[in-house]
Image (cartoon, rainbow, N blue to C red; front, side, top):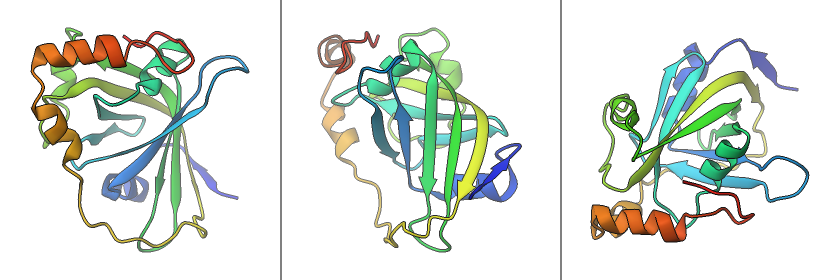
Length: 183
């Protein structure tokens, strides 16, 4: 059985900030619909803003389930696993909000990221109010070596203009796989 902590600070904060990848889980309201789990990464795209606040830069992608589910009910869980060193899993349960690049408050949120990679293709900042912080053993998580970030997401979108990205959101990110509106 893991431990529940009052806040994300100290060693837990250091652990979370050191992980090159984390997983995001969301689901639509009710018993129908698909649960979504997405891996996230790229150095400079995740920040701990305080003992009960985290955020990450959400780049254009093939789907936008997280944004749709947050609009629907706000529920979200982030999971960080140790793939090297001592085994550990940390989960952050909370309520999330997506602030799209088109929102007037987006620029102020972007300033919370001290060293982001190219932000041209960011479609939103996802902010999470953390309500529960817990850890578990992670004994079954495999040991793996981190070799670096992939640059494919950034390079693929670097060829798109700002207008192209608007069209991308309107066509490829219009609705979730369950038909929920995204933007």
